[in-house]
Amino acid sequence: MAQVSLRKVVKLYDQTPAVRGIDLEIADKEFIVLVGPSGCGKSTTLRMIAGLEEITDGQIAIGGDVVNDVPPKDRDIAMVFQNYALYPHMSVFENMSFGLRLKRVAKDEIRRRVDDAARILDITELLDRKPKQLSGGQRQRVAMGRAIVRDPKVFLFDEPLSNLDAKLRVQMRTEIKKVHQKVRTTTVYVTHDQVEAMTLADRVVVMNGGIIEQVGAPNDLYHSPQTKFVAGFIGSPAMNFLPCRIEEAAGALRVRLSDNLSFPVPEDRTARYKPHAGKTSLMFGLRPEHITEVPRHVEPNQHPFEVTIEVTEPMGMETLVYFTIDGTEICGRVNPNAGATDGGKMKLLADLNNMHIIDDTTARVL
Image (tube, rainbow, N blue to C red; front, side):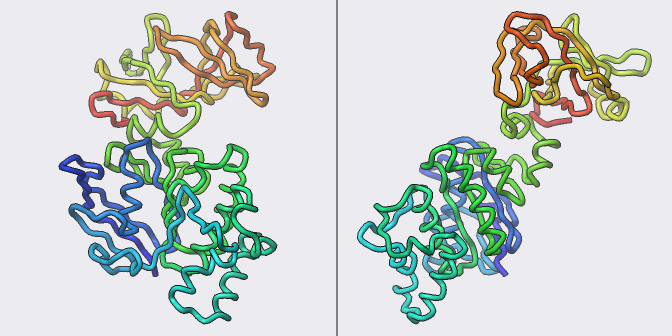
């Protein structure tokens, strides 16, 4: 079993905190992705698990054993880096088997492990080639193969796709997911790309400023963010945020976005939002896909409103439309045939079943 446990882990660089006392439990065979902006502490956390960075305080355990003072080579982990770190003078087979040869593993066992990993990664025909004869995606597969043959307790990936072009990144995401389905090893993966995080992870860990903002399944983070940061970071284009007020009249609530635009609050949210009526520190959040053209049949808690479209961005399968409400730019997503034009008026629909209200003083979603 290879659970990974981080308990109150702190990392300081010259008294500057990079990681601020985080707690995280990673289950055996789980695929966890650490995601966040540059400087949030995700790579530092990965390197502390690997033993490449000493922890300032706290405890890290792998498979139930505390590894704070265990050197990297004895932690039974395998790491795949952003740069592939292949030996240029060695063949693919020699690169993949190098660590096993250092450990004096029997030749027959080395051949079996390399052949198995090559078959999983679909690089069997490349085993005799040198790295300079490989594409970027093939080199990344070789780096993954070198990790797989070691049969470690934990795989650690440090932004492994960031050097690849966009199309190859999408392809390699799929490959990594397939490999994990075949080689069910506990995996910790670091990326700044939230799409990568959402598509790969069993659970996503969103980090910001050295702390963990939220941990959850991709859909939970997308539909039920707990903080303004998570709501704005997960999703592309990002969630729209607008200053708002909750107004109460005759027992019902409305969310006011400007002097001439307000919407009724869905009944199932009235009790939750009622204590916040009249506050001046609230933000209204709604994703672009929940601002659309008006359909033939309007569902409950969906409300039409009219705007002047300032900019359109045709994307093929959809068109992004931009307009302003009370000086704040808002993005919506409409059908390409909905008739959106730059400078034209358009009736849009706000789906309040998916709205979020955020207390801006605490940055918490209500």
